[in-house]
Every structure is written in structure tokens, then in C-alpha cells.
Image 1 (cartoon, helix red, strand yellow):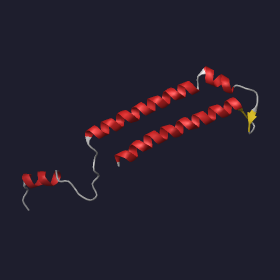
Image 2 (tube, helix red, strand yellow):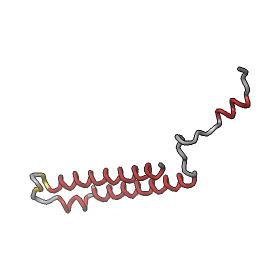
Image 3 (spheres, helix red, strand yellow):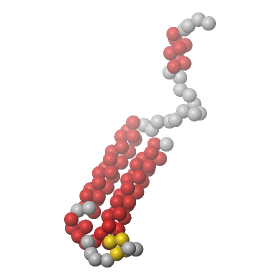
Length: 98
């Protein structure tokens, strides 16, 4: 079999149909990236607000929730909520690309 550069280039540049993943248009990817970034920045600012002095002082009270001091329970719950919200933002982005 003889090497033919024209056929080789055509085979290399061919697109498979069926199992190939369709990429979204570039503009759509940029918009999704910007929106995700804005949401993550907003969540970071929310975290800074939640773990700042005035808010923490609201929960720095005597008492417990299921044997855990109220302040520690708030910190644990707020931390978990931020992680869950960030996971939702990141996973929603990946689902939109598919």
C-alpha cells in the first residue's frame, strides 16, 4: 500500500459521528464560565460575611444544640452550606456543558 499524504490528512481531520462529543459554541462556554465565576465570587463574599465578627457574635451565646456549643454548631453548619452551594454551582456548570 502506498502512502498518500492527501488521504492521511483527510483521515486525521475526519470527525467521528455517534460517539463524538459535541462542543458548545465558544460564546456559550465563555458566558457559562463568567456566570460560574460570578457565582463563586458571590459565595466567597457570603462566606466572608458569615465568618466575620458581627455574625459570629450573634451565635456566641451560652447554650448547646445536641451537646455542641451554639457557635460551633453555626460554624459547622455554615461551612457545610458553603461547600454544598459551591458544589452545586460547579456541578451545574458541568451538566450545562454536556
